[in-house]
Length: 407
Image 1 (cartoon, rainbow, N blue to C red):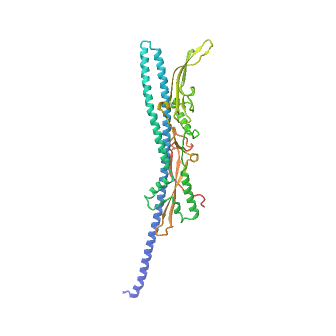
Image 2 (cartoon, helix red, strand yellow):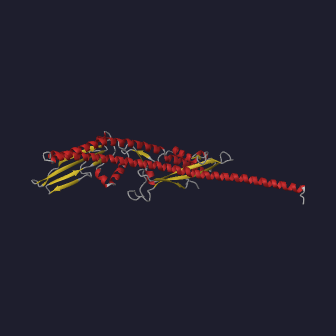
Image 3 (cartoon, rainbow, N blue to C red):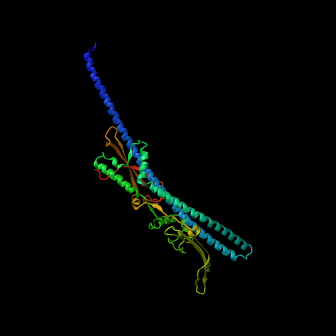
């Protein structure tokens, strides 16, 4: 059966309409899919930028913690060396006294003189080595101070923004990071909250850490040193003493012992090491002495002590100059109490095919936390301890965004 020309005329418009609708649907589907894809890419890029910035900040804080710990360890090692040289000088003096009194005893005199010569050689070599060691420690402290200053600079908002941009641009070169001026198309409550969040973040990042000096920090650094020394019994025995710039006071140290022979003669050994309130050129001073006392039968009491051998040493005398710890970084009180802070990453991009003011925007937030590892038990601080830049327990994670004063 043939179709008439009238029927063909009716089919053609319908076919053209169906084709037009299909093309429009395809175009709308493509545009919608592209917009959804761009928004998904924006969200992923914001999360990656925030987490990368959080990791970057945590690494800088952990670097400060490691260098702080290294400076404390080096400073204590200098004190231990000073105590060791003091003890060697005391031992050499004692051996010299023994060699002098036993010089006329057959065989014994030669042996004691040889022992004294050997000890004097060890003392001379140790004194020369201590000069190089203490000055090397001073140089290392200078490098560590510079590395801490660089790490603090790496926490500046412009550096953090650069880190986030590098990550975001691996997704799309047109993504903009933490640009408050790009928020013109966002409704006022959210725009104002986002701008306030970015502004507060920039101000806060400038005060995340502070640079301090042991002489002007109300004794904070030296309390860290003291706790470190007390944590090790053998170490505290060698460098136990007062916190003062004055000379060592006998009877306050840890290298002490006493013996009595038949209640007729008694000996005592004393050895304190001073920890100075500030690690200046004379920051470490140490002294040792051996004394003897005889019982006075006329007065029926012990007589005065007489020193048989002694030795003294100081970091300044050994190295010519010991600068100690000139500067270090520490957490301000707010960071110590809270133990965490946030880093926002707000990414914006233009919407294709729309006006220049139309944008896609997404806010991701990283949280930098001070947290003692759960598996860390022995020689670790309590999990309830305040945050500090002397333990490398800073880590990053993503957090839910929270905007202030938004209904």
